[in-house]
Length: 90
Image: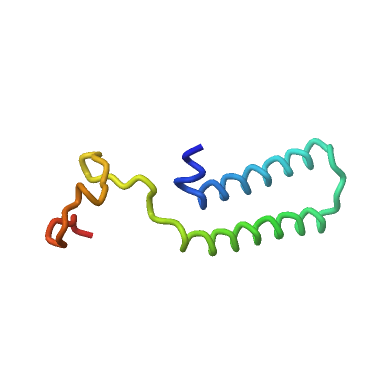
């Protein structure tokens, strides 16, 4: 499950979207009986939790867990060089 480790924010987005889709399918097929207000409350809570999680975690993760150069070669401290002149442009 490297996807979860590499992109935790995207994974959370997929998880909340999946939950909302399954919840909507249960509503459409009548598997659960809830009022429109209850449905709204559930979806608001899921969206709020997802937003807070995204806000908190996005600042803690690196842009990519497996950085590569334009040619697809793995970037590690040993391959970049020792001085700033060897670093690729930002």
